[in-house]
Length: 351
Image 1: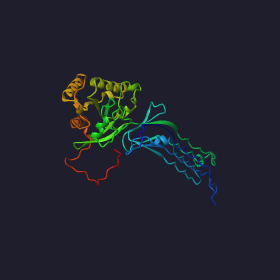
Image 2: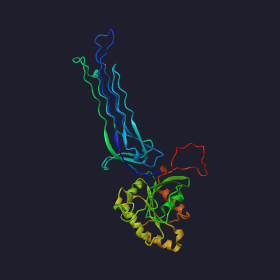
Image 3: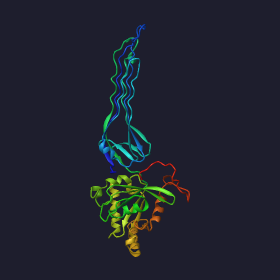
């Protein structure tokens, strides 16, 4: 499945049905009078966040959405049927923005959340509603109100508790493969990761969602490399893990570059708690690892976690620190020694 996190679509709610002009005609009934019914209401455009989706790829091939219009009224005071609402299902974490991408019209952050974005037009009045003491046989009727239409942008921001950041080749893909069941591509060249990856970490009877994004380089905020577009996927994270390659010539400079890009991006990323992890210590000796850790602390890191994403060394201590930053409500606890029942019904998830 291809990953797509932005899409532009056209929306139009249903127009209301027109009112009817009708007069009662029955044998032996004198002065039947008007009996035209009102038109039905047009369908609304509704967005619904559903679990099991993590891409907007469907909107690349379907870009026009039009709700059903209301049916016209009829004689015998029959009101026209209302148009069916058009429900557009999107991944959890999707934002709906206006055509200029400046105003957020809706932000769907919970599964099952629904937002009526465009309301269908009301039905027109039938001639029965125009009857009065001075107008006994009205022939006017309402044509029905038109629906609303607009172009909107959909922008997906993945819902994750923890985000991975770092320079290209810092070992982020290897790390997420180590702690989750994700099968992220690993290669000995920059920008192996071209799209965000999600994985579920299970550590000490707790679970949280980890997001890996493409690596950042200096000038990413100005479009260098892949740019900073994918930083939007970690805006909702509660804590960030900053991986630094121990084989880098200047780890402190590597830390500064990423921190500067987070600050340039804004959206509060520079204010989130960050755990500095010195990765690939299996390729360096203890003395070099200790020297680089001290250098990072002098550059502003509160604590440095030496780890190896390939062998798993030091990863448990890092995950302990991650859980300490997460509210209890965001993790799933199981009794110690509990065994999952394979027959237990759980909602399907692609992770």
